[in-house]
Image (tube, rainbow, N blue to C red; front, side, top):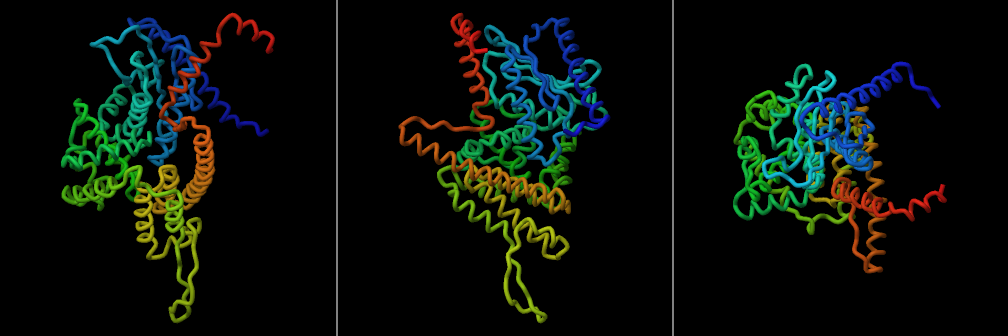
Length: 452
């Protein structure tokens, strides 16, 4: 086994000591303040960015795993390194007997100084019970603020970034990560049917999410659609981050979008026309009309293979040959290359919206690979292309397992069980805790001694 270098070992030691010192300082700060005592169980995530205090070790570890999953998805959507956000995040889960009418209902986030270091502190009160949606939004807010902040990190700068990133970017990116596209698309379709679609200025120009239930869901769905549409543009993730930094620093939304996305939006009229097209074709399909697996694969393979002409000395066609996506980089200097990439990315974006839901992450990774090719980064393009191919193989295997499972369920007459990375994450945790609580009785404890 290869031993780590001295510098790597020193970094790991510093990281470990920092977590210990931070945990001790959090405990002392909370115990000295007029707030409830810390929950008894503490866990540190694998990246050591998250420190969670909860009632049970299982709950603390599950929240750490959930946060790390959100971090990986956030980095993938914005095409940044996971190290783009390194500010520690404290997640404190406090239990209360009854929710107060005047007290906080959902998770809250704020910046703080602990042990001389700036941190994001997420406070969760139960009941009502914690939801994946609420916690994911708070974690995404912390990541976006870390990406958008300017200047040296301190509590004031972090709080300014938290307050400066607009709600639609936080909410939209959180819902893109959650992957519940059909529910969001359903609200957009309802708005179209009612003749109440939101314009660009309705979304980007509003200060906060409305408090009315129906309008809240409508605004949230349009924020999701706006975020997904901007990320789908050429070099969209990088431009989205540039726009986020500008708006967090106080630049008006119209100027921030124009500067970030350049020639894509010449003026507000061009932006509204682009948005009308996005709303029209991204809301044309619902779950029952999505393409089948076979049709999705057929269209994907057609996009990922370039048909080239073989010409003789007189420029006459003498044949054709296919060029798979892994070899496209060889034609990077050709005059037609950029226009071909734009056309293929537009087709991939449409397929991501209309294709089979299981293949949505596959298409998203191919879009990421082409974005790297647009930037001229061949190394990252090849890496992203191989990752997309691997994901496609995994989805193919997953689809086969799901088909086999549904066939077995249909034969046995039992209800099917769906699986999702984020939905139901903490419901499964509660089932584990419930099973553990049931098993703890004198007879079980007596028999456990014979098992070891």
